[in-house]
Image (cartoon, rainbow, N blue to C red):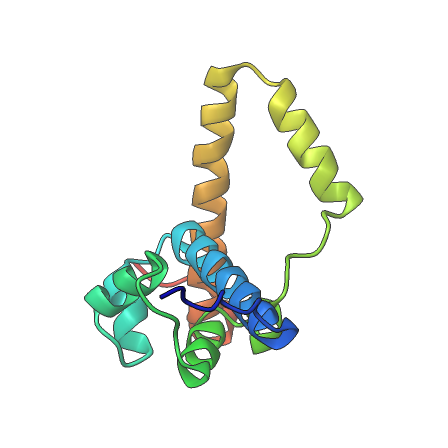
Length: 135
């Protein structure tokens, strides 16, 4: 006995699936680029490191509430997480073009320098009144 062909997915389910893929990709990028331990991020939003690892691996889709919490952790909105990133600004394009023109050893120095600058900026944001933390 022949089985009936599977009907094509409706537009709503296709859109929902794309949104989950986009959210997962955007959150994965934020996790990786933040330099913050995955466990720390997971605990901040009431989840385990295993939950976050499995979510990022695509084993399941996160609930809307979890996406809101993850977005908030990175000072983003749910809209930011569910949508494709904006096109780069002219300044960002210039930085990328200049970076690619550098020799590999200079690129590595620039990567280390930018990481140090980013960490200092984050530390300044977390300290009272925008002052650098005391050592």
